[in-house]
Amino acid sequence: MWLTGSVGFHKVIDVEFGDTLRVNTCALVLTLAEVPREVEDVVQHYSELLINSQTFQAE
Image 1 (cartoon, rainbow, N blue to C red):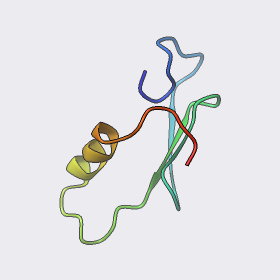
Image 2: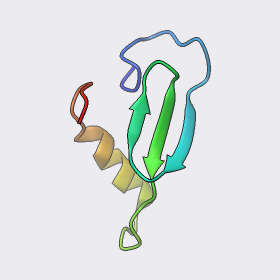
Image 3: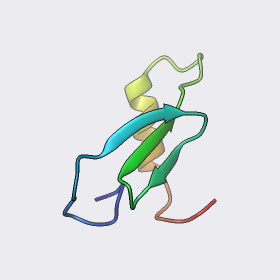
């Protein structure tokens, strides 16, 4: 629901890695930026990004 703003999905959400963190809510694609080398706990890093993210908006 966080990723798309809806509860039902027409397909499995794709997760990709790229240069920046971005979400395509129509195509159901989450693109994650590579984790900086100084980050020791990758799960905590991405969890904090999700917890501290804004609602749907363009940057």
